[in-house]
Image 1 (cartoon, one colour):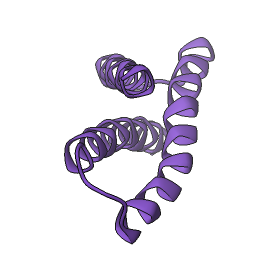
Image 2: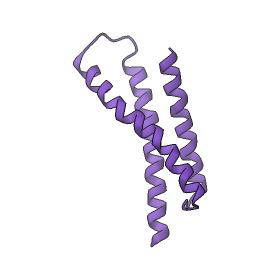
Image 3: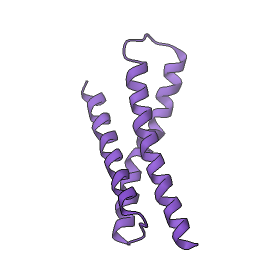
Image 4: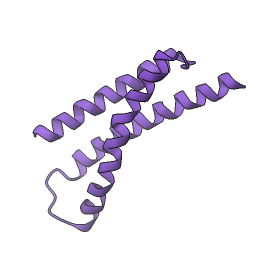
Length: 96
């Protein structure tokens, strides 16, 4: 039962890292050349918590590696991969 709970935590971290990456891709594609509108302003307010979540997910996964609470190592590695892709996307959008 405890292993099941730890796997669910790993799975939610993975889903969170994918959602951060998809949100960033959505923001880049949708608002590439659009003018100013209210929907864009609302989405930019949502971006701040998404960036915070995207920054803390890899820290949590690395901490879970250190204390050996990860049940699925492959899921944790995929989570770190998607978090790295999200970090690259954040860097790309900041520089562009």
